[in-house]
Image (cartoon, rainbow, N blue to C red; front, side, top):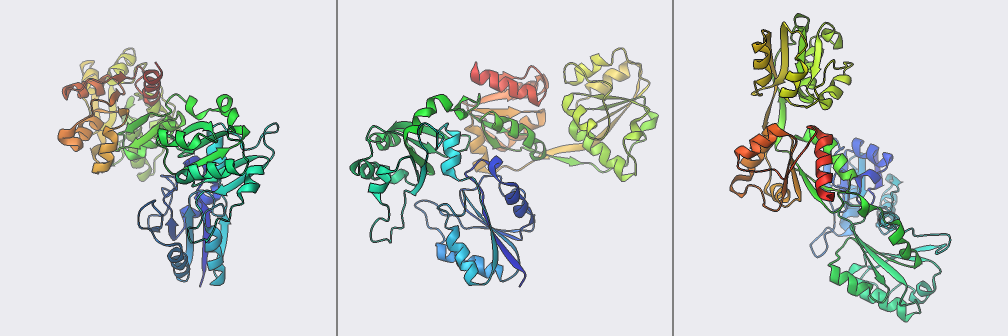
Length: 491
């Protein structure tokens, strides 16, 4: 038997906190047994043929007992391969990883443990609460707020905790908050000591409430705080007013639906998350390369690329023919915007011309003083004919090369509902508008969702469907789109 099990911590929820070791093991695993509270994108890097087995526990719902999880890990390991047990938080901090490790050891199975940032440190840091501070707390205690119900009595020494000279952090105790506060105060902890509850720590929709130890349970109920949450008790909570940073990001608490194709959405989604937004990925289109041979680029004095997708598809054809960037050496290369120019630069090409406005009309204006005899426009199937017609009117011989097409990406009802409930929904092309509205059907767009357009061409398509965008980017690219959302959210 050549098997190994990795007990891997996935961290508290922010995918950026996954360790390099965790990502490496996920990418190589033959099987992954994963929990409910792992980051939403934690499995994106898994192999397409990996077994993905959900063993998470949902509050108030039937779930696989820990003994069955242990047995399943042992049984799968006996079949061989690399097995990852992916656990929310840290495997050895209230994660029952120790129990799983003991079962593996008893079965003679090799294992390793990959620690992670635990919620008691991460959620508090994201809330602006340092669990230790030179002047306020030189020690921190991590305590479970949800003990094994089969225990005859509590194993927590409340008197010792009440006298503990530092910060107390309770995990999984939101439903027991009243009892925890009562026990601490009854054992001598000051009733007026600062306390906080952090809900969904490190997620974009993280919430933090503060009160005193005596009133924190009542405040949590009033705010509707739900699991997963951690509770902090101690003088360090008083630093939050000065150190809070997550809520200061311009899109904190806002949700944004992104309708770009999945392959192109990651960059936009990442930038929105960096600004604090909750991103709902709603890919309405899929880009499909069209079959065809590499064009003879030496016969053109102008080659126009109208999108990063066009650049990618063009170089796929060139590479298949044994060609590279040198095929464009004799032509003036025009890119419709900075995104397309960046895609060209990744293939060793510096665009000779980028218009001031990133639409076909802008490119036409930018080419006004450039003599053109023969031009190739590499674009999408069914693209607008504004650019080729304008060049033909100037006497140029123009070929249009359709390199790809956009087709509808099926959307499930849950994703559509989430997109319609978002604060903002972004449209980055006419095709995203058309295909989203087709998928949404009669439901259409919610009146409460602010529609964001990347530029006038997309806006025109929205207006054809009787939709007036609330926000239109002044610079017609992804950076301009983001800037417009931020200005609207903070204005």
